[in-house]
Image 1 (tube, one colour):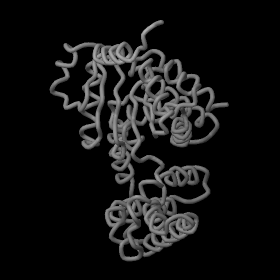
Image 2 (cartoon, helix red, strand yellow):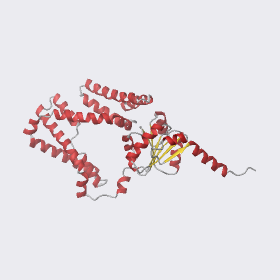
Image 3 (cartoon, one colour):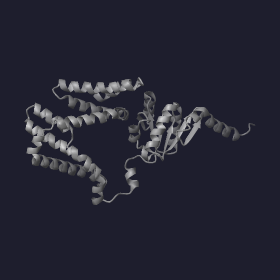
Image 4 (cartoon, one colour):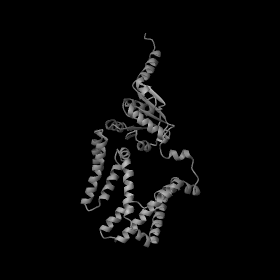
Length: 339
């Protein structure tokens, strides 16, 4: 019910076509969830955490992620600063062996469990995933604070456990940076073709916009049996694509996080069906930066607009006149004489 209400609420925010209103709507959901959790005796952090889980399952999750990326990096840095500032170094010094044992035991146990869960797929992938996810989750810090507030554990125990969490988080980047090296020593590198296919997205075509042209294009691609993905930022067109069972994502195609979500690096082509020249420029630049080998096709109204995009490095630019001229010429040349 809450998930439905959030999607319904965000739907109205998207209709405004104003990014600030969309961000305010997201912030309102988080603050409301945090305050609600506090009213029921839980921490603000727990409420915000649940809000994040609900937003991550909404129809607009990719656009939310892209819009919040600058805030995420800033607040993540602030989070680590606050956590680090709250650590009592004397506790680490006096309990160093206990903390080390906790870190090694929990990370090893978590890695083994994850590996066993994922072992039915590729063993190499299971091994790398298990190590990458072996850290003690930062949400446990919230649990320790709640447990201390409820007098379930004392301050020393809470700080000791928090120190173990922080050390595991510090170790994680070093583990991730050496994942491939560790995996190479235990497992052979699988054929690249198999790895890419397992993602479900390879050699696909990305269609930006589900207007009349995008609608017709996707129909043609479907008839040809080609894999494609739609990106639409207009709520009405997005919902229309959903009703037509199209593989569509809501988001701004000019934002890199949105493009990453649909595996732009493995796409063979990007078709931009929008009219706005500035949007075409932004999308083209983002695609070139992330997938320089992808073939970019765009549509403009006339030669004047084509010349305006001359410096964008678009592989193929069609004008409406070009397309109509070819279609009409082909039709009249192959038309039979009337009897």
